[in-house]
Image (tube, rainbow, N blue to C red):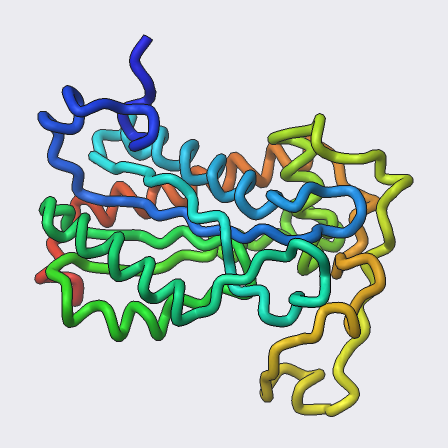
Length: 254
């Protein structure tokens, strides 16, 4: 049985040889602790699933999109004292992104979407530096901001809270411990007003912020909430891919 033609890892040279892909999707996650109850691969599980489902919906609407394998390591410089929170520095990410983009560019993929699933990753400056060196259009999307999560959750949370817990309960319930095992995800805030209010910024030292590695209370999570949110995010992204696939990179402004 042939694999899904919009998933690079599952398709084959016979199909790839005969398809001109308009949009490549590069899922990018992280490997890190997610409170006591969620797996270290939470960001990868979520981002891979969202990339696959959104690509499927776009493909069925006629857009030739291709989801690449998910890169599982993200920027975790604030979590180096938590065992096995795997860190990839931004400079390393830039080198990896440059290599991936050069391959896609050589094979005449006209647009690249970096589908980001980890808050510590920020690809905007990398894209600014990369863009003059490739012919393709490059953009980034944080899937967790493309839909207002407050429509689906009482308190979405920032990390391993209600939103992420609900998603993994829906996608891989066998990997989620009972919520009775979860911490409350209480997060301490900066004492300096500008940092606390968000108009100044500094990276957070995670073990100083939270006792259980979570930020956001997961106890109201349900797989039903996760399913509804997953559907909405995948549909929103699919629409974006379809529109982007049809767009001329030389005429993106009106």
